[in-house]
Length: 424
Image (cartoon, rainbow, N blue to C red; front, side, top):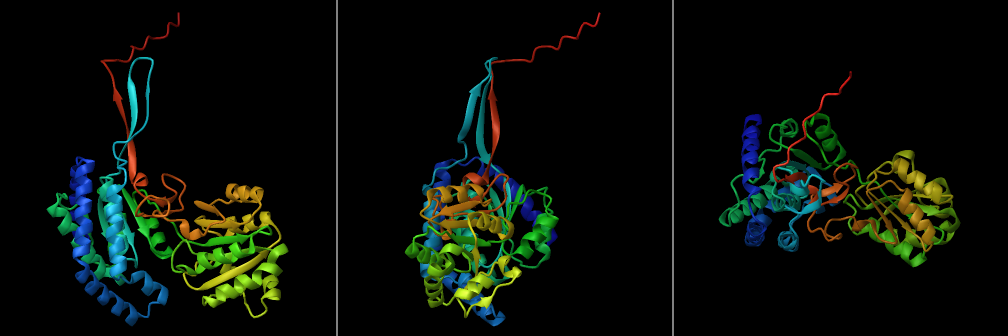
């Protein structure tokens, strides 16, 4: 496997050089062909996904995990539509970020350029194969994809559809490569391929991310967990609080921007907790509460310290009463994963303080945490959501998949000779 990956790395490096020469019009035409290829391959994709779903059920995957894995005609069309949308987005490559002139007449430009070659290691969701491939391609990056064992048949079918349709429209050879094996050795091998890969992005569970980070010889962009919070302030609108709690938790519980902990201001707890709990339970949510919460919701399971640190990815929610905004912010910054956190309040000053003091990639006022998403931000399909602070933070899309270089233009300027200091 290592020898095969080395070959793939060498091929990706060569492809990256060819990709950097494509015009925006050429890339967009290839993307439209890829979208058409995905639509044409719908029967093959469904058949491949059926194999993965059957294997997943046999392995005993949870309902949430199976939902992440499942493809149907609607999701395949959404995948194709996402590719079409990326084709319509402005191309960041070649964008002049800043420009200025020096007193000597030299002109300097800071210009966006492709990163080069990117390795992406991910689990479960087969749509990541398409999202990652097309975003990297649009920004002129060659990519090596390594999906999880749960979706191997789906991933292979999607990659085949993209490559076949793209090649017919001018896609350079080896611009998009999928590792055909899911053995664990391939993760470590990719992480050590700094000769060929400029960046690696792991998308999956904490174990996968820690394995990549511990071995990587190149930069890594990641997020470990999605321990997200919704704080219902004393000044929250009751109906809004219920709606946002239900949406943030249940709209799609198995994703990283779903809420895992609900914090409620103690001054409003007696009034707001019962209707919030009733609405959540109607959706099948199990509630685990702190001692104060259980005096109001008497049939609630007790929450432990581990619950505040848990990403359930399921219909489970931990609930805690807090004395004030200060305690809510302190709890989020200590127990959260710096991903997505929200406040529900009509108090603008409290909202601004929350937005300013919570140290997370995305902070929300009176909106569901489920909006932490590249598509919802208008970025098109996303490569992932980063909780890092360097290079990229939050939803990563086209701009985050570029670097920059300085282009300097002169008219023959030379450095003045250094005159030795006269020490006489």
